[in-house]
View (cartoon, one colour):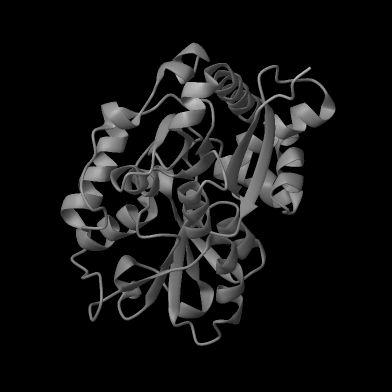
Length: 308
């Protein structure tokens, strides 16, 4: 019997990718078995290593920032988006030692973001601009890109409070708050409800060679998203292991309040994705150019999986 083809999926240890951890847990427990492929996963420390791995073929698919995936697609990397991995899910945290109470207090400070090609860049940029605050080099606020996993340590060691705060995927925000170094300033869902962020992209050749395998993966992830939404305590236990975090941190992210991250509406949000790429193209000039979402997104897998 010929071995099944392997699909290698890259991800970060963030709550935005928890549905992948739930699928892995189902496979390990034997409650689910893929017929058309074997799943291998690789955790990356940041977004650039993830995109590099997609570009050089080290992985076949990835849970990745939508704008970063769009830029890869624009540059000729043959990937397609098949589903969202979540909606919302990020947090703005202020550095306690920076004494930030209002948006105006961010003036003269550095703000950490996970990538320029991200909804995080858009959300914080918009919040500042709405308050008449300049963003960029030699302006009121400077953005600095830091891998999500590195943020807690930077805040811990910033004794002078030169970093005003950060916007990042959970659980790193809640981790900083619970460690006593930061205070919750805003949730991304309250700035832009149900905003897109991370998506699952798959290499074109995998879509063509093993569509049944891709369908199995997408269907499993959609079901995993429903599980996270309906069983936050069980999902927190899985998440603590998958994300290498304290279970109480993950439980807080999934329950306080509910809807901090949405995992049961994973059908591609064309309108939201277009809003995102428009802002990052015309206002911030982070993306090279807008792309055709009809060419980039292949919604049939999510549709067949019953994604909302």
